[in-house]
Image: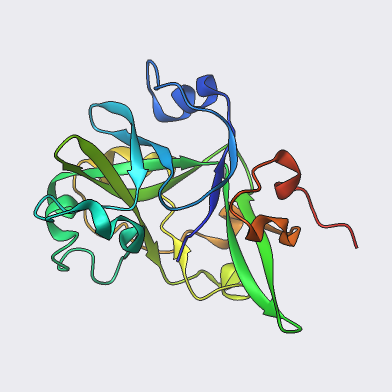
Length: 206
């Protein structure tokens, strides 16, 4: 799964990496959680959407917190996601994401960030529910490096495949290569979603 991530890049960096003329105003965040308004990149440009997808057929937006992730193995067929998978794909810029590993009976967070470059691009889907735009992050099985921490990871789309993903291509929902990610142990302060400061992504002092 992917339940927390960071985006603290300068907007110009986002524009350059994703080939955009501009992006909506967004603040740097180091501990984004489901329910937050996050930046997404669609075929027609960038937008802000609430993290937690609400299908267009839903009677209320109460599903939001439950649909922050979609599994790559079922996303094309699951009723909550299949329409968006066919017609409303997006990329979700991220400076890095967090996952937790059980260590000595405690949930120890790790920060996973690009090994080379500024940003990840998560494979995502978006939906419009009345005047509310929402989104979800697609997850897959981990690559060997990530498997030491967790049994899932976000689908990270390579820069060369941005257009293919947004254009509806198949076969892209797979783990990224080990070489694409770097992992470091960080403070358990990230466990509290109210904490949102740069120190969260710093290596934990031992």
